[in-house]
Length: 228
Image (cartoon, rainbow, N blue to C red; front, side):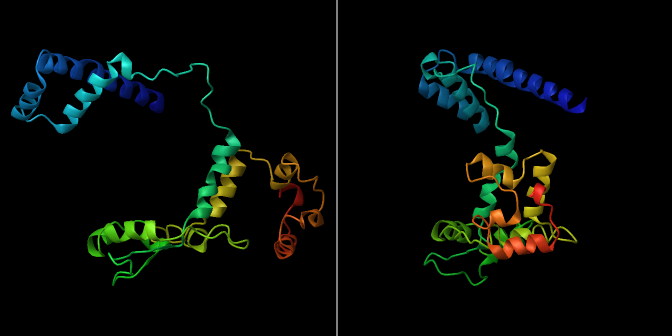
């Protein structure tokens, strides 16, 4: 009951703020005033800039010429379960294991670059280790992570995730696999058939898709082929 009630209260609050309070304030303060008078009035009353911004947004959205015209009430906005719970996580394979921290000449700062696992839960580094600029320079000056057949996800994520905050570090790959099980995502062999890559019935059928060393490791660990 808590979650639905919370949502209802939030919507009532938003309605009171945006549909009643701000509109009435706008009508009271800004109707029939010139642009200069509105600016003077806002500064004179020392209105919160966020409130002035909200009033400006109301001015824009109340103008029919600014309304979005292509809304389709019959369009399904939902996301496929297999995409949200699995495919969408492809971004995890793009994460760099090292955060470069560069000076204006694009050289590493004296504090050095930052391994990913040391960056989590460490906002103090922004204050004590050079600020935000070195990180931003590192982001735009670093190349994208090169895909590697034996490392789809780097070890900073699979062996040291949130190591600072947990006694035992987490494994993002394992979390993704467990999420797939929770959501009933079909196994790898199902998607091979779905993509027209053949009907796989034995471990040997996977040789053209997976490195032999990995297949041998799976068989050695006693993995169930049907659930692979």
